[in-house]
Image 1 (cartoon, rainbow, N blue to C red):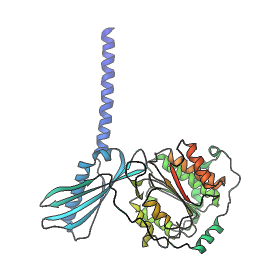
Image 2 (cartoon, one colour; image 1 turned 60 degrees about the vertical axis):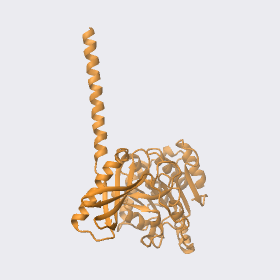
Image 3 (cartoon, rainbow, N blue to C red; image 1 turned 180 degrees about the horizontal axis):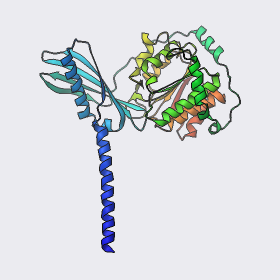
Image 4 (cartoon, rainbow, N blue to C red; image 1 turned 45 degrees about the vertical axis):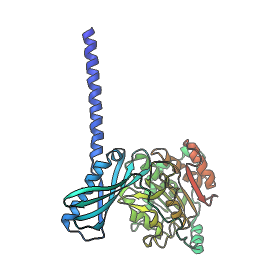
Length: 378
């Protein structure tokens, strides 16, 4: 009997050790996966130098950011050749590690020299916080556009339940997609509402982006767009924000470029294949800013209510802007956004009331999402 028990305990111990080993192997594989690295240069490079700098950047990221990569779903690096030297080149990489647990894209910077066949690190700045202009020039109010948008702000929904959990958002997903398909004659189109996420690796992001789209579809009688994954590209979302003269509501779920602590500066919104940086909101590429101007915008991203992102979005004249004041967790924060849109668009609550209730519903302290601008009924 004693030998039997001993053998069982030994077998159990071996099983546990095997499980731990497999887990360690999984984590190790995540640590070693290659980051997505792009390269640009102000100086002319031949193909050999281009490849050499790109490979050096990849190697340095794996060497110096393995811990950050292990807690990320994706790592991106934009490598820029800063100057040519007598022996080679000096370059920098701006690194974004997209967190698994919350909507933080941790930004870091590594500067290095590639000279004489050797790579030398010059500087590493984790939780990188570059300086920024505090007061972007405000876009003059376009009263004609704002008046035109308000004429489109028509409540077309039927009666809806007071209890948000009783609303069949999932059942409307296909109808909402079919309605957009009838309107979508090209990539972006003049929709009254846009719901997007570039984080398809999170089922909650996909689900609540679709449910928010259902709410928008129900409110506006079909004039709502949805972009998920690769469809939520920087160019596509900027086209909506810049050119969609009908846009009344915009919901973005995804990583904000920021640092680890609550309340850190936020520099941009990660999209598929690129980031909408704060300065993109005042760039010629987003002109004439017709979509964001006069719209209600909610960015479900970590610290996205912090400058410089906040002040640059606000300079484009949205009607209302809502963003994260904290590190917003994956799985819970998206539900808060969904409930805000339900309460404000379908129950027609004042937006300040809708946001307060949505935060309380999911156990967030009021103020976890910040709000500025118009706070009344949508």
